Length: 163
Image (cartoon, rainbow, N blue to C red):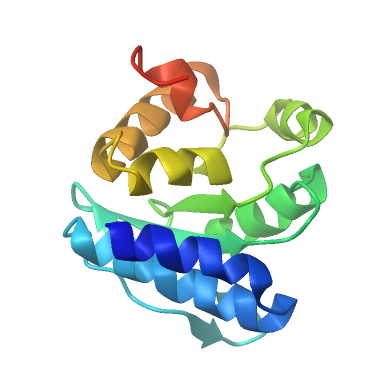
């Protein structure tokens, strides 16, 4: 895990395009360490999927984003559209290193059910530092999304021992 944490830190010095692909690979490696049977990035007609993984027999499509700006409502809508275009039971994980804009989260959550959850850079830090188990973070985020329709809830709100 320390190796992945080091890789994540090193990515800050890499150019944006190269960093994006390296970030996808890092996430795939992380999912593999937790036994989530990851699949790397793949292309379908007209779209790129950054990867997929399995959690408790559910398949999640992956959107991996490392940009300076927080993910917006438009970003969430595009990814939700990719998920909606797959099997009805498809779900998604949107990893935005910079996080999610509050306006975007509020707009996205109004008037539509969600089929995705979000993870940000701080969540990732807590996982890579060994403070939190990735599987448990995902389980709690899925449950909170099911209960509240909130795409993103910071891990620190889901665990008592995390600040």
